[in-house]
Image 1 (cartoon, helix red, strand yellow):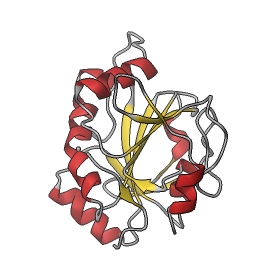
Image 2 (cartoon, rainbow, N blue to C red; image 1 turned 135 degrees about the vertical axis):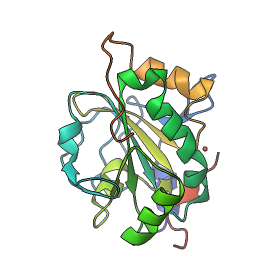
Image 3 (cartoon, one colour; image 1 turned 90 degrees about the vertical axis):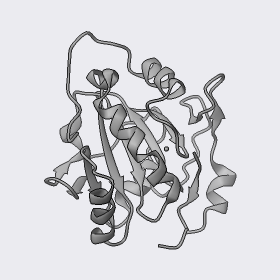
Length: 199
């Protein structure tokens, strides 16, 4: 899949003072992948094949805000941010959301081998026939999607981040205000790799 046409059509804006590349709900509605769910729209259901746990439908995460990280084992920026996602999932903000990962690897064994090497504890799933990759709009990896409790996409962050750092914290606190209830992270970092990278 060539990323050049997608890039020409994608509308990303720089969040002031954060250094994050975000797709906003007031941006023009140009999809970057076939069937992409845009910011402000509700994710469709999909069956997610478990990599380090059981398979489950995406809709089973409804009722709680969700952070979805799309990655691949061959993607160096994805690997770099993985540890910060783990720390985020178990940190003090974790009462507000659940963190999961979606691998776009073509081979299950490669994705599982990376999860074992990285000591992953959050729930990870593998995409099937590009269903989640297309729905989430993953033209580049990593991609992180913030979703509210009803399944509506709030923001998309392209490229690796230090997810337990102060900039990410400001973004997350802005999207997921404190509710007062203590939850749990189910299961339990800079760059941007084109989806077309060799695997």
